[in-house]
Each structure stands twice: as structure tokens, then as C-alpha cells.
Amino acid sequence: MQSRVSRVRGGCSLGTPGLWVSTGVGLNFPSIVGLRVSRKHKGGKRGRPFTITNSQVIMHRNTATQTGQVLDDRYHLTEVIGRGGMSVVYKAEDLQNGKEAVAVKVPLPMFASGLGAWSMFQQEESIGLRLNHPLVLKFLANSGSARRSYLVTEYVAGLTLDERLRQQCPLPENEALCVASQICEALEYMHDRGYVHYDLKPANVILCPNGTIRLIDLGTAHAAQMNRFTLSGAPPQIGTPDYVAPEQIERKRGRKSADMYGIGAMLYEMLTGQPPFPGDDPFQLASNRLLGDPLAPRELNPKISAETEEIVLRALRRKPTERFSSIAMLKAALDNPERVIMSNLRDRLQPVTRWRRYRRIIRHISLVVLIPIASQVLLFLVFWHYWAHRH
Image (cartoon, rainbow, N blue to C red; front, side):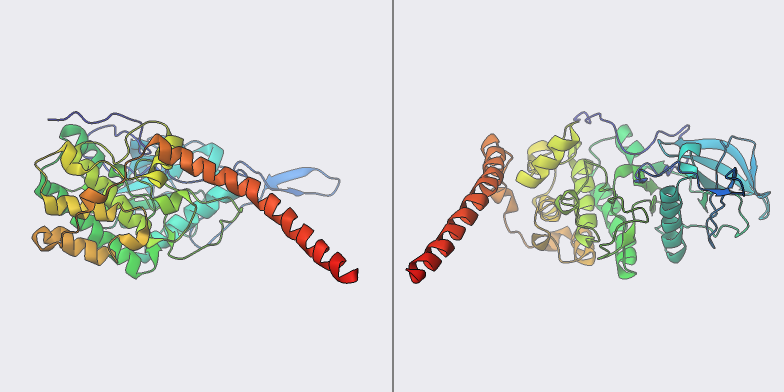
């Protein structure tokens, strides 16, 4: 069995097996987080900070949460089940609903008072409450009288796909195809309602004990074909380097094709034991993704069928137009790989070479040099034509 490549992921580690975690590590908080807006009384003295209210989220200067604490006289925080760079996830009891187990995601104090953090939490909750599918994490409506910012979702028992891959990798082909097919079903539901996930990775997929999956962490989800910036004008988060699509690197928002690439990258890892472009340098990973194709999966795992390899390579094409036309088409191929029409993509792969990397640099330098020269030549010809007609 091949050893799995070890590297730092965007998710967080779980305290104990079988617990759901969604840390919001993928959230891209703007540079204005931590900003305090205060009233000024007569005489110029500063007063208490504003409380920014919304029908779903109410933000103000936050204090650190801890286990044993009760939020808004309702959610009793029992244990930490996930911790990330920007938020903490607790398992909690809903005291107003028979102590039902829920998951509560709370931003860290340094981010809780920022207008950008408020905007991102509001967007994640707004999208989550509009989705209702058995394979997508269910968001629970928060009370309008909440005195702090947090998200409440269902509590899901099970292992993340990331944990499963740490136990066994590569996975059996049938298991990998089944997991990828269910992810497609969840994404097809999201796409039909006008949203893209935009941060697919093993840490964001729960494998439930009943054999189903749950797609979690909508921190970077947004409306398809939405090209506007966030509240503060900060650029969007592009996802996790190992699974990001070329169009995400080029900062093209709202592309459903990016989710398809993410599925292809996860399926590649489930079948081979490593991501399409292994490495620790995110800039090098991004460059390789734009310049060439990954190694053929059967080179790493000869047990994979040729049809499954064709599916993976088609989902990982650099140009979105060369991939499957929709998530539904990809799911159909995963469910019936024997019906896949072979196009010999394996023989047309273009590996990343030093020449391809230098050629891209030379092309950019040429544009920078040639454009000013061409402009000067054109300007000279215009003046020469004018002078010739005058004399």
C-alpha cells in the first residue's frame, strides 16, 4: 500500500473520532476585522461600541467562549470538537429543544467585532438556511435576540473523509466512486439553487455511519456567476491549494466548474493516495496547475480501471469547457463507469516541465516589452503620415 503524502490542510484536527467539525478556516476575513465603531458623546468622549444588528446575526465586541458556557440562555457548550485559526466549533445542547445535540461555530474574539467577519458569517448562515438536502449540512435558524455572533447547525456523527484517508489510502475503487457520486448529488442540489461551494476538500465531507455523506463548511460558498466583492471590498478566498481549480487561481468567481474540479481532485487522491499536484509550496502548486496536467492515476495505482481514470482526468482538465458539461453528467459517469466513452486523455497529458514554466515567463516579459515598442512605432507612423501630407 502506498503511503499517503503528509501535509498541512485547511481543516482542523478533531478531538475524538466520530465528531463533526467545520472550523471556518476557509473564511477570508477582510483586513478591517477588529475595527471598533463607537459613538461620541458631547465633549468628544467615546462611548460604548455600536451593536450591528441583522435579522440573523448580531455582532459586537465579543468575549472568549468556553465549555460550560450557555449562549443566549439556550445553547450549553459541552465540548470543543474543532478549532481553527478563525473560529472554534463546540458540541452543544439546545436547552429549548430537549437538550438536542447541535454544533455551534463561534468566531475568535479578534474576528468577532469586525464588519468583514459579520458579513462572512451572515452570508454563510443565509445560504445554509436556504438549503435543505439530506447530503448537505443543515443550518438551524438563530434567534433574532442573539447577543453575539455564532452559527448553529445540526450535529453529525461520523468521520471526515480526511480522517478516512488517514486510516486507509488509497481507497477501494467502488468506495471512492460512491463517495464522489454522493458529493455530486449534494453539489447538483446547490447548483440548481444558484450556489457554488468553492472549497471542496476531504475535511469538508463527513462520512456518516449509515453510508451517506454530509457536505459541510459553506464559509466560501456564494451565488453562481456573482462577480461582486464582499462588504469591505476584499478579494474572495480561492480555496485550499491541493484542490483549487485553475479558474479559482485566476480569481474568476461564481464558476460551477470549480466545484467539478474539486471533486476530480478528491477522487484522484482517494484512488492514488496523493493529490493531483503534491507539494507544500502553494505558489508552486498554483503554477503547476496552470501549466500542466497531473500524472495519470494508473501510473500510481494500476488497479484503477481505464474508465475510472478517464473520468478523473476529464474532471481535472485545465479548461472548464473540456470537462463534463455539468455535475449531473459527472455523477452519471461515476454511477456507470462502464458506459464512459474513452477519449484517450491519458495519452494527451502534458506534464509540467521547466520549458513550459519558462515559456510562460517569456511570454509575459515579451508582452511587457513589445507593447510599449509597438505603441511608439504606431505613434511615429501617425506623425510621419501627418508630416508627409503637410509637406
